[in-house]
Image 1 (cartoon, rainbow, N blue to C red):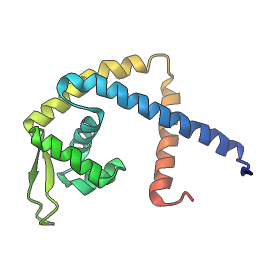
Image 2 (cartoon, rainbow, N blue to C red; image 1 turned 30 degrees about the vertical axis):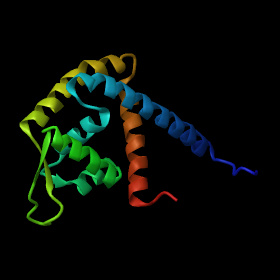
Image 3 (cartoon, rainbow, N blue to C red; image 1 turned 180 degrees about the vertical axis):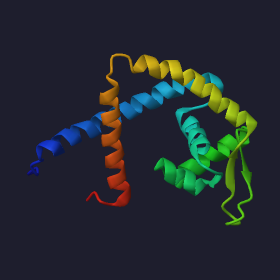
Image 4 (cartoon, helix red, strand yellow; image 1 turned 120 degrees about the vertical axis):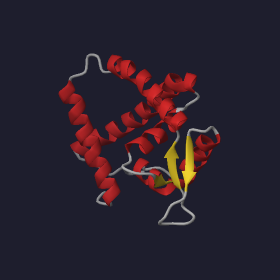
Amino acid sequence: MEMMKRSPAGTALSETIFGLLRLNSRLLTAGDRLVASLGLTSARWQILGTIVAAERPQPVAWIARDMGANRQNIQRIVNDLERDGLVEFQPNPHHRRAQLVVLTNKGMKAYDDAMRLQAPWVNALSEGLQTEDVEATYRVISALRLKLEEGDAP
């Protein structure tokens, strides 16, 4: 099978993508361990964080969009969060069937507790890294995500 030749940037990006995939897997595992004592998983924590970061209550489809995730997967986890009293559904004045997802006091406490655990963990993880390098990595990741979201990538 003949391979297409990659540009130097394409080769570097391909290696970076594989590295990011491996990193994502490790981050999810570490996050699961970090918040397990709170009854959370990385996925639940990420959804709570997305709800907190939103300017106003949103339906599941919007939460999924903001996370770049599959709506059905997010719906399943939100249903679990609702069952555990961390979120509740409220009527959506703009759409009868797409209820709004709202954090409960219990959900806000769980999120705050998770963030208290995350601060020393992320500080330790960042030891030895240059702030400028981390910021440059974030800019590159953000630019790639934007290209993919806007459909500019082939």
